[in-house]
Length: 87
Ligand code: FES
Image 1 (cartoon, rainbow, N blue to C red):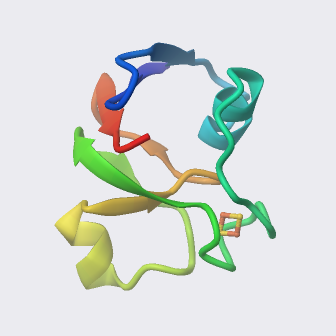
Image 2 (tube, rainbow, N blue to C red):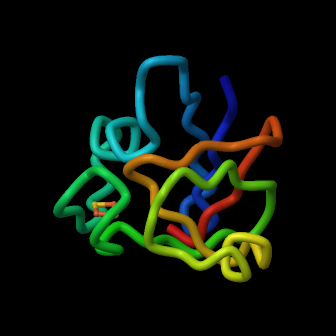
């Protein structure tokens, strides 16, 4: 479990096991473009401002993953207790 903070509104969303970040965002009325929902297309890319992402997609290169600057919200999670996203 971890918390996602949306930088533009300050809103915080709790992400629980079994729910993807994309699903949690959608449930809170946050529209993120998504297509494959499997970490393959890159449509759901979001800029990460704080926190350490647990990357599980096949879109970003290892270097991009290590840079921790963006994430695919359909399948990736968080290694830190909190992520701050540019949403
Ligand atoms: Fe395709 Fe996330 S929706 S990578």
